Length: 93
Image (cartoon, rainbow, N blue to C red):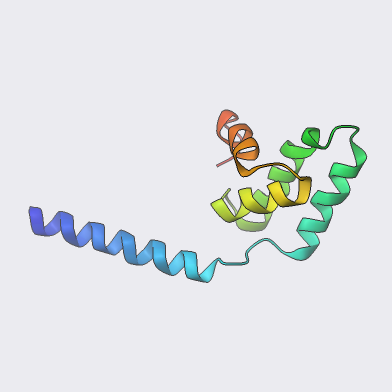
């Protein structure tokens, strides 16, 4: 049983490492530009978090740490600000 858990943990680590290396730049420049354009449409850029998260989710299929970073940079907020919205609403996964 202990060996099985270790193998499972190792497999998850290898998969995570592989996905992290492969997904270094998953959010396209076009998507980032769309996020910046959205932020410009609102009097307060923070209001663009939800639509920007939707764009990121369309790009990757889910909200990754890289997606949170891209949204934060595009809108001019911290990753923590964006993550607090993404984790509050169930429509982002």
